[in-house]
Image 1 (cartoon, rainbow, N blue to C red):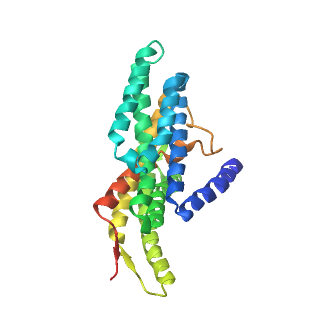
Image 2: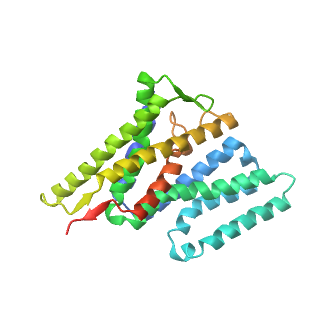
Image 3: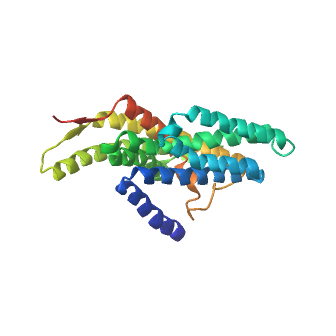
Length: 283
């Protein structure tokens, strides 16, 4: 427990600092490092790291991917970049076919694309919605993580019906519902809290309105998607016979252990903000 508290005491302030500074470049640097670490952890868990050439290409590509969506000239040629990466992987496989099996190359290529793209959606929110980026990112992350915390406490207190006993024995349907309710409640608090802060900053005059009903509904979906991501990660760990993906955060696991719920939820939230923006200026 002491180790978990110390790790949290270090990691949480760092996360708050990144969000508070609201610097676009800093977001992409953070997502680049997180992506490389997450891909590395997955390759270690699957034992595919033994193929050093394929693994090195995978980790480097994961680190570069966020910037491919930030630098205009790279963003304009992103399809070509992905194609070249896949061609390089296949070429390496042909030359090292005795050690690099197709399923290894396929998995490596998939995670090298999927994980950085999913994590980069957090930075995309900062780029596309700079005026309200802090709120949207905090709301997105809180909706995922507070749901997980709510599910844990509710499940511990009154969980009786197992949800997926063969994948995650501790998860219960009571905890699942409790997590959704917790996420919805905090969504309401965040929405009205954001409006309250706006009023304080502008001398009691509100400059925007937050569609809290929309964000409460979105929080429910984000909560469910977070469970999907979490269970998927649990299944992978069970198949790989590992307890955690890494130990970068002692007591909490690795980057992938902390962001497994975010990998599905954050891209969905980003797309929903693009479809309908929940903050309306007051003329």
